[in-house]
Amino acid sequence: MKVIITSKSLNASEHLKDTIESKFRKLGKFFSDDINVNVMLSLEKGRQKIEATINAKGTIFRAEDTTNDIYNGVDRVVDKLSAQMSKFKTKLQRKHKDNKVIQFADVPDPAEEEQEDLALVRRKKFDLLPMSVDEAILQMELLEHNFFVFLNMETDGVGVVYKRKDGNYGLLETEY
Image 1 (cartoon, rainbow, N blue to C red):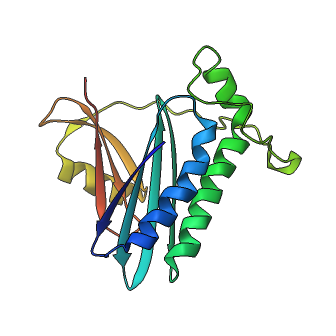
Image 2 (tube, one colour; image 1 turned 45 degrees about the vertical axis):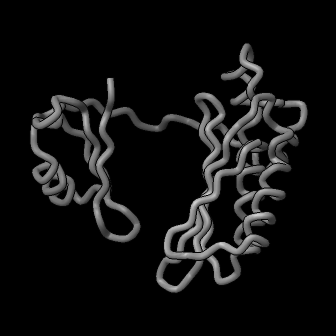
């Protein structure tokens, strides 16, 4: 497992980098292929933030933590990733039954109380209306939703605008 560490407005010491690499390498036993882990360290509102993403050929594991002690944050992120793998082990086994990317024998079985079925509780159909990103944001705000799907007039692709935790907006765009 290759651990790629990037920092934004935070200087990571060599000791911190070594700690991150050793903790994340322990997750490497869950994967058969050489997988990359992208770890982003940043300073946000005076607190340290760690974000980790593992892309296992079609399945993305992601966790983040904001803390005053970056070392505890690293432990919590690794625990969250391990818990995700454990919680969704059965569903992932079905998805990857022919693909040997994830070593399911090494993933711990989920605790009984953690097992839950992911149930689709509502389905909604709507027309994709062509509009600009600004119009989509306005429409989302008028509907008081936290996301809105639209046909982007500028790109002729499907787009999704969403409200971020920091109060700003994000845009998801499709590629063909």
